[in-house]
Image 1 (cartoon, rainbow, N blue to C red):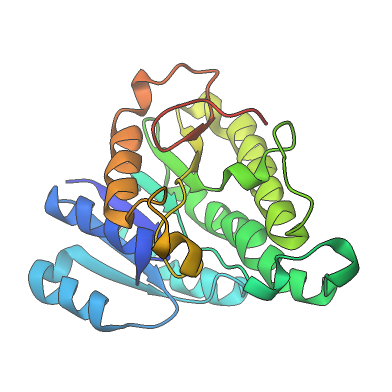
Image 2: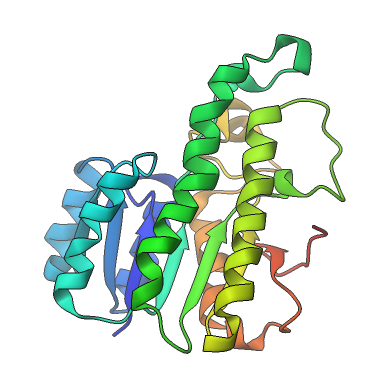
Length: 236
């Protein structure tokens, strides 16, 4: 039975990744801002294998406090999925229309939130542990077609850099780190356009593929770190 941390586990992609691991018999540490009906349903079905980490990833003190529950269990963490993220529809604008102050909370969660989780989780990782940071193709500098969405794209590029720095530090310990673009997913973050598009995928499909990548990380070439949910390498 693996010990698995999933941030953003209350809904969407994070919820589906949590469900997948519970179905596999693992214990899931579900990191959420507050308990909702989806979390309660999982607890009713899977009992003590659903553990709660209540915190806002934008608040370092809350993250540190929540992770005390993991320290108290004296366990090693096998898998970490950094899924939680945020975006504002009104932030998808060109520079002249961008409210830069509104970019700050996006950056705080999407980039620094991942960093907070990695910092608190690192002491519990071991050789063979896998970290999956769900970033985005929007974080690619080499393949950037956009001329808008400054806050979101910059936050994802920063998350990619955090992942690379973490990998440089912990790779020699046998810890594998992946940055995964989940696809265009039919979630609240994907918005109405994703829900209406035939090109977007359901979170269940993305979750199944991402979990497969994580469980088969040892089969991914060592030089490949940034990839999409189908396993295609992406340019930094």
